[in-house]
Amino acid sequence: MSYDGISVREALDKLNAPNAGWFLPQVQRQYVWGARHESEDYVCLLLDSLLKRYPIGGVVLWETTEKVPYRRFVEDYAPGRFAHQVDEGLWGAPKALVYDGQQRLQTLYSVLRHRFNGRVLHYDLLFDAKQAETDESGFLFRDASAASELRYLRMTELASKVCSEEEKVRLEETVLPAGGQDPDARLRIRVNLSALWHIFVDTSHKSIAFFPVKATTPHEVNEVFRRLNTGGIALTQLELVLGKIKAVQSDYEEKLWALSERITAKSGGIHFSSSSALQFFHLLIKNTTRIEEDRLNAKDVEEFRSLLQADTAPLVELFSGYLKGLFNINHASIVPRWLAVLPIAAYLTRRKQGGHEWRIHMMKAVDVALIHQYFLLSQFCDWNTQTMVTAFARESMSAGRHGKPFPLEEIRRIAIQKNRTSELHEYQLLGQPWFATKVLMPGRSYVFVDRKPQVDHVFPLKLEGWTTAYQSAVDVLWNFQPLPAEINRTKSNRHPREYFNSADGSKYWHSYDCIPPADDVLWDDHAAFIAYRKNRMLDALTTLYGLKLAEDPQEP
Image (cartoon, rainbow, N blue to C red; front, side, top):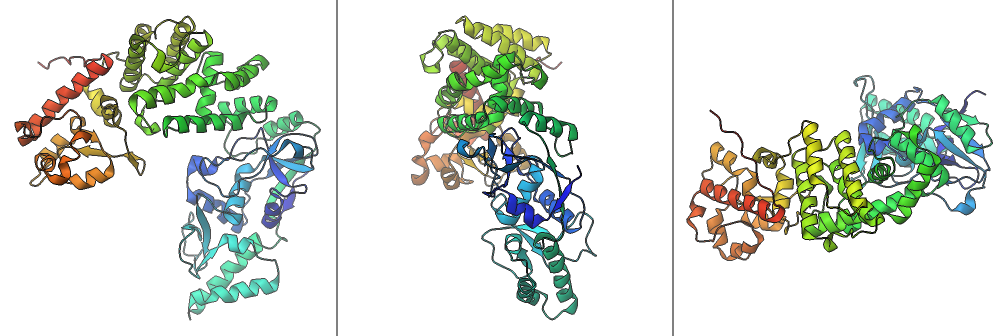
């Protein structure tokens, strides 16, 4: 059977249509163009390919009335907005499930009928294709609140027009004034509008090829899809594993999203993705972080279901009781090596499964101290490869199952065997200043602005009379303090001695850690102050976590 043709308008009308509409099979991956590329240019080139009548790849779909789970296309696309499964009562309705072409159709649906990342796709009617570079197009995204301009035609407006000559003429008369009295500009508007109309409104031009698969079961159509492999972004091993699980439990992915959302809520803002949660379950089941779909059997799939149903509490505890509860870590970017955190969650899970205490606040201080030391060393010493984390997790799971302390010494030996240092050096702290500042001042929380934590330089970077040497000396971990932006603005570039003794600054004295008294002579010398504060912060490293910096060899 050959491919059939369908116009853009007809295809859009079929998406999510209540009668024999086009939908997404539940086993299909989620939309990745917007999240993975985050490029408006990429989307614009897809529309430009249609406008230039280039092929954009075919759509493979299964027309069926079988009672199989499926999802709707997302309307307004935004990162983290997922397509949810429809009610089970509708599964037996006539429908066509899109097995290949989701990414293209979802993009067209969002930009021609709705919004994409909160923005609206437009076309510049004065765009001159003859003068443009090969990778330029007349398409562009503008904020939804941007003032209307005649030259910029909203594609959602165009795509909603009735396909009639009268409607086309009426739109042309509306936008022609954008060309002023310039006949060339007015001609360009007419040519561009005519081309847009032909592709995105007129149903006579069949821009999209689709192939209806004749099959009686989801297994058959899955095999057709695998063999066709018509292009796009290849499925990852993790997506293949998820597909196997969803074939048994159709709403499994939605339950993973709910787990991710619960972690975010319980942790005060840390995002741990559903994919990361699935990788963690894979570690518990297969004893490795390296995912290989062909090694998964029916028993493993059942274990994935069981873990999500009964054993997510220790994973949530890692974020709520440990990272948030003991460190006030509230954002994923603070922790530089997320893979290395999984052995802690695996340890807590095995303790729970073995009937041992697994809640952080109920564990002995000596046991928590070992977890602290592993956490800090894994981050600063870069114990983060898949091979290392898998080996660490096996040790921690074995210890947890038997209710033993966290196996830090065994993990140290593995790290050394993998050519990693097991000692903490000053350069490692200096190389991760956000993280180091946070763990050395666990009583403080970062306030994030534009995805960056607010950090105050106690001695400001641009103190009156500053030099390059001064700026380099004070732009260092030992001069950092987590601080809300409003306090930072109050302090600005003022000398700390003057600020802390002023009426407006003195009230913020207790917002700072590891500083000398306000009348101390150390405030007269930034270098002396930084040396003093470094010692105080390193004392905190030992007091809080039992860690000391290794002595670097002296240069001859």
